[in-house]
Amino acid sequence: MLRSRFFIGLSLALGLVAAATLSAQDSKDKAKDGAPGSGDKVDLRFKFEKDKPFYQEMTTKTTQDMKVMGMDVKQTQDQTFYFSWTLKDEDKDKNMVVVQRIEGVKLTINIAGNPITFDSTNPTSSSTALAEFFKALVGSEFKLTLDKDYKVIKIEGRDDFLKKLTQANQQMEPLLKRILSEEAMKQMADPTFGLLPPNAVAKNDTWERKSALNLGPIGSYDSDLKYTFEGPDEKNADLAKIRVDTTLTYKPPTDGGDQLPFKIKDAKLTSKNAKGEILFDVKKGRLDKSTQSLELEGQLDIEIGGMAQKVDLKQKQETTISTSDTPHVKKAS
Image (cartoon, one colour):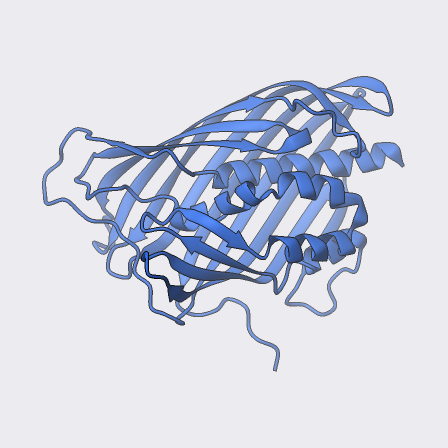
């Protein structure tokens, strides 16, 4: 039982780490001129209509191979989240209040040949404990306050969100409270908002963002993201193409994580092929589509039940986000 809980806990934790890392694009902006291209500069800015939502589908595919206690453990995850975003207000300082709602969730997780499936749009979907955890996500809302540079400066709804999740799965409570900090949840909005340059850009101009994400007993990540404006898309001139190159540095946790079924004592993880592409709709003023990939590889020193173990890890993750004017999830009649 302890070994099974360890595999599930470690796999989910590292999956959350990678997802959060791909989303961690916050703060400390600094722009610099690249080699100037031909044509006029483009001002990449968001445009919103009050009370008119737009919808997003975010699909993440993860393949993870671990060797633990001489055993090979393979895990695959396919997760799809459906979101809606609605501008609700704008205050005197021009800060925007946007409501994010989780409209639906689909997932298939296969751990060492044991599949777990869930589809919130299918009433006959699996009713396992893990499926109940994901079911609790649906309908959750967050009120985000964005400043004039589209940085999330305030988030409301975290406490209610954590309460729903911990009621669905008590075993996940210690991990969730540490990972889903207020700062981490602010960064979760960045695949939608935290990607634009502070000024107008010409072809081949670059800008950078840095972030530091502390996930408590899972460790922390420092991310350096370099964006390059590559000009208009060849198929649709309304879409601006942006390349993303990421440098990721992992640091082991400084606390013990006594409430978890395992402890990460030390780790040496390196990232490679951390890159992506963004298509931004200049006419509509929003993200049209983005793709990102990340590979993690290395060794972790884990303590399980007081016994030290080494874990060899290889993980590959690909995330795609697409935006639409119409909802992906049909409302129940």
